Length: 214
Image (cartoon, rainbow, N blue to C red):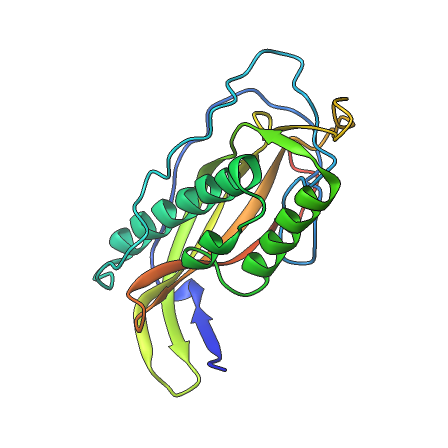
């Protein structure tokens, strides 16, 4: 197994403003490294679209980043693609979660396979989509165990993880129990794997201060 090391503080970072209503919430942790308001999910109190968005970025090969800005843009695109693919699996085909492996790795991918399996086993019907508004991003070098360094190959994204548009119905047709943790600050770590020429989400978790409104 290849061990990857990061040097996040070395390179430039940027901040972007966040827009939207503020709610006092806590981010529900599905595991030690995957945030996500997993089942039970709830029906929204306001009408929402049940359509699952088509992934905004085609999953395929991309060239290695040459600057921090390129790295951040690639990582943000990969993060959104992960969310779109995840929603597609939950809504349209929980029986086949293999598509997540093209955009996520490690515990993030493993957790998604588990989520899909539980949805299928429980007969849960999901609708909607996820959102992630980036408020801060930084890029650093990625170093493999063999010493290979990918400049700007590791990106940390901090932002508001939004699940207000993701809802579920139990197998008996009743709405899943309401979960109050519908918006919360989260952190994503995205790696550029040179061998695959792709950005993959490696970590998804709550920020150090879990109960941060967004």
